[in-house]
Amino acid sequence: MMGLGVAMLSLVRPLATRSMLAPTTATIAAAVSPAAVLHLRQSTSRRRSSSLLASASSTSGATATVDGGATATEPAVRKRVLSGVQPTGALHLGNYLGAIKQWVANQELYDNYFCVVDLHAMTSPHSPKELTKDTYRTAALYMASGIDPERSRIFVQSHVTAHSELMWLLNCATPMGWLEKMIQYKEKAQKQDATRVSVGLFDYPVLMAADILLYQANLVPVGEDQRQHLELTRDIARRFNDQYCANKQKKTFLEPDALIQKSNARVMSLQDGTSKMSKSAENDMSRINLLDPPDVIARKIKRCKTDSVRGLSLDAEHGARPELVNLLGIYEAMSGQTREQVEAEICSLEGWGAFKPRLTEATIAHLEPLQKRYTEIVTETAYLTKVLADGQEAADEVASKTLASAKRALGVTLPGDTKLPKLL
Image 1 (cartoon, one colour):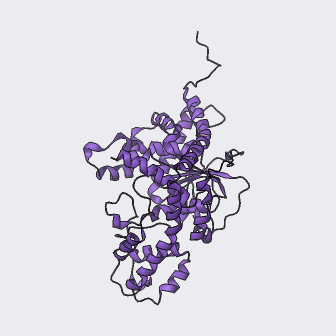
Image 2 (cartoon, rainbow, N blue to C red; image 1 turned 90 degrees about the vertical axis):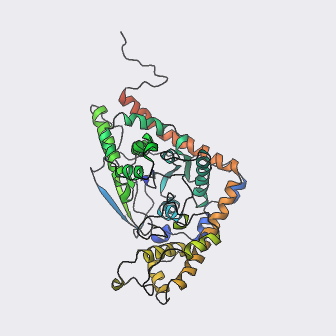
Image 3 (tube, rainbow, N blue to C red; image 1 turned 180 degrees about the vertical axis):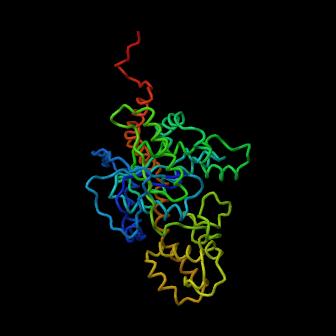
């Protein structure tokens, strides 16, 4: 979730097949009926999860691996998933293919909570007006991509105050030395004026831990760049439980394990095939934003970095070709084909000049229904705000229980307490 970045917090079974992870553009367009935008779905039921999360203890330091080719089956009990994306700048293909598209594909398998992590977006200097706009844009793009409010809860992180409250409680149980070792803080701080580096940037891993622990996740799908944050979360949970729940049968927090996903959804920069596509990159030509118009998409692909190797072969004799691997992966996802089908298609092409128009056409066609759906959603602001309000209420119901448990463990009094300790 995360920077919450884009990590999922979940109790999960093996992910879906390739065909599930790459729904056609028609599937995306139909995932949430356009009629739902014009009518506020007054009959939408507030489905509550009737089952509690499994309390199986996690294996210390364990890592599960999911192969994209594994077949998912409907779990006997729907497990809970929480994930989110920062509303900083425009969402791009990396966000979409690496996270959101998979959320859409797996909606029927889990009890889903998808948040816009606006609190994490404030750790660096930002424009308040743009943050407001980007928060609503991100939520609308969730739905435009196929996340259905009738099957998944969509909410804004700051609307559920338990995230901030639990962060403070965890701050008081987290040694500063742990945070000083966080690699991403050091990297991000170097990119900022030293006089403007905030306490929030230093402390945001604790907020990330609060995000994860509030929903009692057992497995957290993360990329390698987020593994350190997950290990910190585990350390914080263990320290809290040891210090404040040692004599209790039930611990306040579960220790989540990492779930490393093997997939081709890692999208790299159009200007550097060895760096991830990023919203924070200064050069907008390095990414394809989900709302880029066709002419902009065409220009970015036409000018993207390529190598000088003749042909489009990935044979070992040609050495590493990161730009080719990246563009073929994007084409695979945009066209809905398998890697084998893509390689068979391009093997006879002479070079980049023949391939780029195909990539451009496939990308524009894939994003067209998403962009149309987005336009419908943002013109019906009453619908958008209702979805967020419903999602906030559902998320708060879950998060508040964990927060209350943490407060009880720490000795914090709660409003409405009637049974008081002996005071004389």
